[in-house]
Length: 147
Image (cartoon, rainbow, N blue to C red; front, top):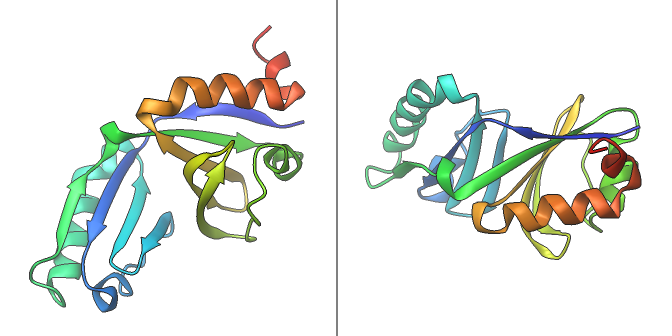
């Protein structure tokens, strides 16, 4: 069974030259474009993480920009033994064993971060309520959790 839970986290947007972003060692990051990355961290670690990331990027690109983008994104964690099967009902994106992919989930742009224990799906906050309702309808096991 798969479980879908809203996850409280901070999202850090990083804009810099590609060679600067190549230095990021953040485990929960998603390269969106050659000069753009999103990094997801626990809420209480956001300030120190932003400072650390900015120091890393500025060492290579003095014009690097590191912003708190948390308000623009909403995150859900898809967990459980059937998490990958449930995700396949939401998207055609091929999931890596671990790492990140960007693409359509339920037809809207999303960022997907995969770890050994979960699949984290980020969608824009403007689309969050629709995405959650649709995800729960698309995957019957998730809908049962609402009852």
